[in-house]
Image: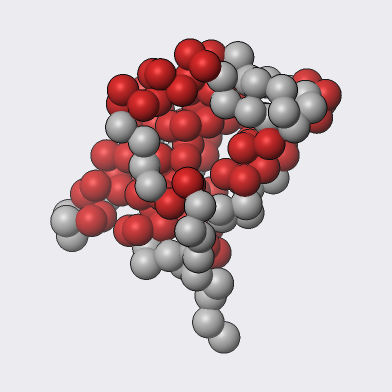
Length: 139
């Protein structure tokens, strides 16, 4: 049985540059985009709330056209970048990416990548591991 492949022609398939992340974070990303990004690999609302630094209840209270605050917007855009990178690294296999995000990795101090993505530094560490995998280095 083959795994579902990432197929999208929308804005999510392209990683944002650092300056785009800053600019868009300041403007505020709409709540509706949380669901779009979660759908890239099948993250739950609870996982999304964790990454965004809020409770699932507060996430559910936001209306779809309501903007996130600057911190949550930045985290969402960083998550999008990591997911786009991971989908590229794992040839678009969404179930592989989701499994990888939840599996502890030695190079991440035996933590799952998703566990580290509650901080900006954690996003960097996870992206670095993906970069090592891209180049065939031990990760």
